[in-house]
Length: 513
Image 1 (cartoon, rainbow, N blue to C red):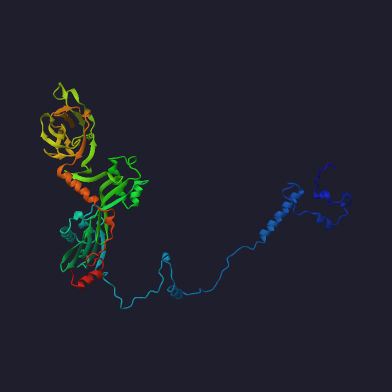
Image 2: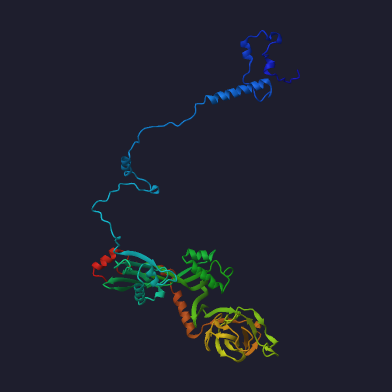
């Protein structure tokens, strides 16, 4: 009445049993109908009804097991579809992948016409290409290709008459044709050889009788420098690369002008770069790009910076158009050892009394190198009293340096030396208690404290050297931008190229070279 629901079981809703008074009146059919043979084994565990259900389940499982017929393989009889001979015949017509052996196809049996060979016949000629490696020698390349050591050395000597072997660049390809050998234990002789020995020279060699005849084929080369000019814009590097300048040349250009001006702040977008590099073109179509020759910067139509590499007294550096070279400040360290004694008064370790120590001592192992602190000329190189083996350099403007107690001297009087050049080796000659370097600095002939002076040097061209320098600038800047890229008519290398039997046969048919 309150709206709640009541749960009733099926037996409560529909009574299956009658009152006890009427139970005796039921027949056996009604009793069998009321019997539950498969009760829920999860309910009323342990009751009589549960045990009856368990017994029923056990009886059914035992009956199933007892009546199981079992599983046995079924045998199939009959002969194969193909016999052995028929299968082999069919297999001869198959195509089997190589991964599975690839041994299909018809194989013919040997007949009486087949005779075994005592040894495998050799090819009459072998064509191959050898490459000269870095640090390799011409003779070793030929030996690795199968040429005998004696003939390889003879060929190297013959080629050296046309071009120095050191001038043959690494990576050069050598085309070889090796002929028939007299015995298997002997190396094959060289029938023909061809290579591009230099950018402007090709060499061909061919056997005529018992000797190799060499022919030099010169190749015309255009050496017009490659000049590239353009506006700096947002990026000098990207602009120059877009104009066709090699990356290495642009990097060299930036390093050169960076010593004179600030690349980041002194170069404007409207400035023009002027780059000239070494460039060579062969008549056969090949080209080579070399090092940077000229670095210029143009502002407002006028040269703001002109730099040219020039060599003076064996020293190469970049000079401005006025003839002024690079400025070099400071002194190089005379040796790599640590300072063991400074400039000033001290007790002498051998003489035993106080006196002026007019230099700086650097410790170091016996034989360690000693370097010139800056450019100069050797004025003394030899024994010099208590200094032992001594070298004195004159650097100009009243400045000089001295190096004592050397074990060995590497320069001679009057020789010009450059900064960082080895002039001797640490030792213990003269009044010395052990291997070290005694280093002195002189101003107007008087010894001063080396740590108080810093050298600043600047090269300057004068006279004929300056005139030659400016003439070189004029010749380079007279080259029109892009003139080196003007197309030229490609020319084939004179004579047939070696590398195939047909080429050699055609040459022999025409009477050789």
